[in-house]
Image (cartoon, rainbow, N blue to C red; front, side):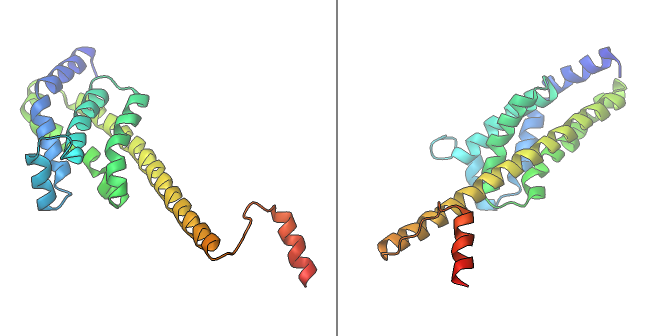
Length: 189
């Protein structure tokens, strides 16, 4: 990959940014129901449409960061803003993250003529590898989001049970050390 071709590819990605982003957002929104998709695209008020606004805004940030100035810390943060929405909506991992892989196809479609004209095939392969790295980062982010979601659910169940037990007059100390519990069990036998 030559530096000159790499610069040309980045210039083309900047020039085609709005077309790529529009297609990328449309592809991402296809994973939602037609009613949701219509609402996300038509409603421009960020307070009435926080999901659509967040997806649009964060995809643009993600595009700039992953294609033009790779920075893992910022990428993780932006990815989390998108993936957190999809993790709580119970998308399976492949559905939640497919939008990242879709970017490769969209770029190749948008830059098809330019790739051939400027002989950018090897540069496109390098960009695709960066997008694959982004997807791996996305899987880490998705896993962390789901883990936090499960912890929240477990804590909520614990709080509900504890509240029920208090209201019922049952006192239970969950903080009792495990060793003391073992001793009580052994003594009762």
